[in-house]
Image (tube, rainbow, N blue to C red; front, side, top):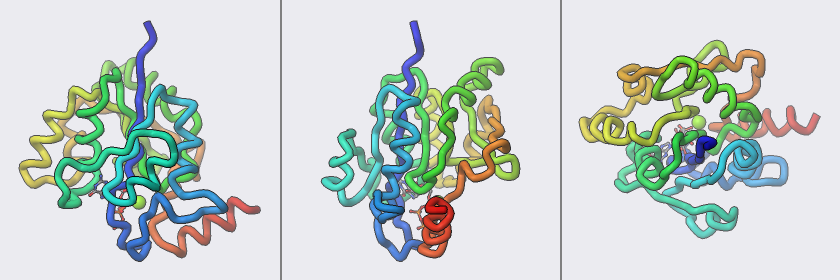
Length: 196
Ligand SMILES: Nc1nc2c(ncn2[C@@H]2O[C@H](COP(=O)(O)OP(=O)(O)OP(=O)(O)O)[C@@H](O)[C@H]2O)c(=O)[nH]1
Ligand SMILES: [Mg+2]
């Protein structure tokens, strides 16, 4: 029987550096930012969840369930992951942010094969220079550990996964895969690069 892999796309942040505009919904080359991530991820997973804390009806228009953080205090990306892990019965959950429009099209296959060959609990992506803590493939059963970590006042995702059997999957062959759009200037730069 083949494994079921679902994804959550995190769009639950405050997007302060984007001037508070809901980052997943800002336009990037004619499409909402999150739509670029959806198009990259959709062929790789069975089901998608969108995690958002405002503008639910706009996010619902993409045709996937929209879930909000259980705690409305904007506790960071871990809060979105915990919510999604509670709502998925898949073997693995892929976590990606809404603000990486160029995610690898082979993200799941490479993370899964490395995870399985190392018998690990989770895989985190790297661009070769830095780990990408909001790009993970993990077992939903890790939710209790993540919740205890967050409830203890911790926020740093890399501190959490360091406590687990974790592999780092290297995507340095795709140097732009994790280009992250946090500011209007970064959006403009990427927009021009895509249009070329
Ligand atoms: N569910 C949830 N997701 C979050 C939260 N904070 C950040 N994220 C998501 O985590 C990912 C990485 O966060 P950032 O790029 O820093 O986004 P952000 O916090 O909205 O932006 P800034 O306010 O500019 O730091 C993005 O996909 C965010 O939507 C949160 O409190 N809850
Ligand atoms: Mg970001």
